[in-house]
Length: 208
Image 1 (cartoon, helix red, strand yellow):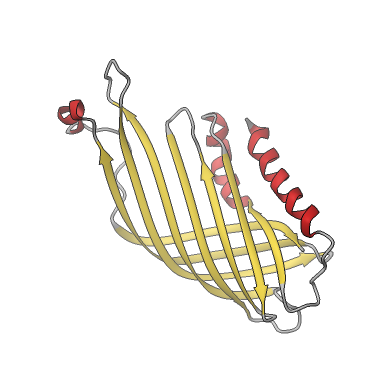
Image 2 (tube, one colour):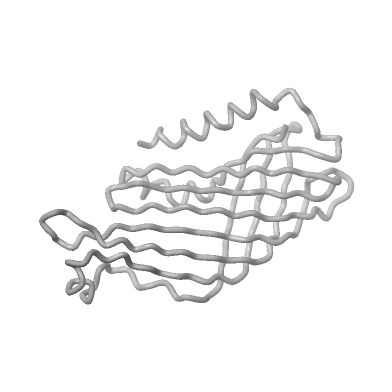
């Protein structure tokens, strides 16, 4: 299982590299990069491997007008032995503060965040039915980061985001589980509907 998500992400990066790898846009006003979030992988890799889950994260960034860029980050975990699946999607806009080298150095920006976590909860029915716990989280905030290149193509992007979030939790309960849902269905406390949203990413990838 440890090789599963590494191989998948590697194939995607190689695919895009073979398609766009001949283009060097380091001195132009536009560029395209594909990256993976090492912080996301580090945070979830061991639990995913232990629970035989699949994990993937990719970021696509498109730069324009020398100092502006738009990127979209997507992450996925599951399914696993714990019956948990999670999707994450983060679009964001970045503006680089340094003018000497395009799309590098310190930057600021804004982001939106969508997270969907689905969990199946067994309630002991002989038919092995489940209560479906669906958690939707919406967030937005400011992004602060630093990006640089090694040998024109290898890209490192360190970013920190801080904002607010709103969470909705919904339970899809089978009719014969109504009496059981009143009991504690899991050991985790429910997420608050409102609160701070934060994110840390260490993106590593290839700039075309």
